[in-house]
Length: 127
Image (tube, rainbow, N blue to C red; front, side, top):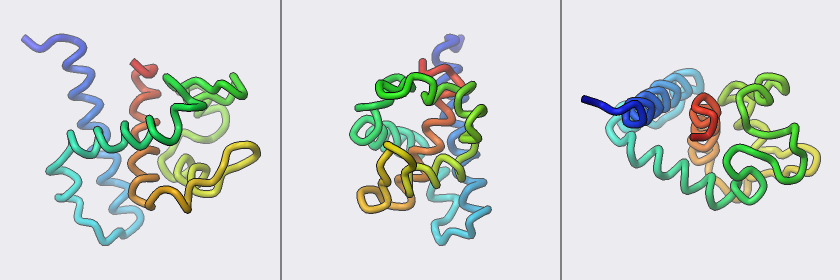
């Protein structure tokens, strides 16, 4: 029998794969969807590592140590129109206000992956 925690993890990975697939289709990327689908654990681990190395300093567990209301929880993401991979990717790429731009530090794929990771984590309330 699958535990609730394992079920949540499996659903999160499946959602991440589907989300990344739709992003690939929507952006006409040269990366094959099959490549993304064949390595879900690697994509999730990589996105988590990118988040940990670049974002967690201010956004640990989806919070915001600088501006509490501008956190990465689902309610705040929706409130500020950051509830899509495209919008989060744009913010991560270009920065805004006191949030720096990461276009010179992360690849376009890393930005897309970490954006999908943020959405998937927000759906599970960062658990």
